[in-house]
Image (cartoon, rainbow, N blue to C red; front, side, top):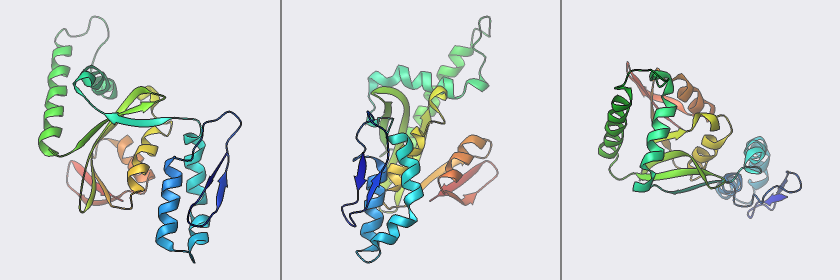
Length: 212
């Protein structure tokens, strides 16, 4: 299996027999964009500079089918479960736990969704699918200055498998700035975005405003 850049004709090969086609993966889109920016003379340079990036993305896009579909009212149950599981460390759900815990979590979920809708009224809301099974959600909005990530969440058992990375890189491949706001206390999210090249643009006592 291989990916050929339509601008410089470089072929990036990899994968094993039986793995799915990757010609529409984020790596091809990213590479094509870089080569288009560099122009003909700099195309080969773009290939060499980003060979490692392409290899890393291909390593999981070759074996995973990650897609997005619009979120609908039928997804509320999944979104509630996602909210609860991502924040499981804050809640006590074992048998015999506080009987009002489920009510409290439901109220927090509804407040969170309401806040997202109010703060990002024009945002796109998608369900992240892995092999056609819901594993997360993405909410973002775009304007003339770039992308604002309102929320990206992946089920805990599906984290650290490259899913979130692939989704964010797809936005980055558009060549526009990508921004997000992360709670200082959410060390996992801070590390995730730093690993993608995000830097702190502004900060206060509670939040980091990051961009790439």
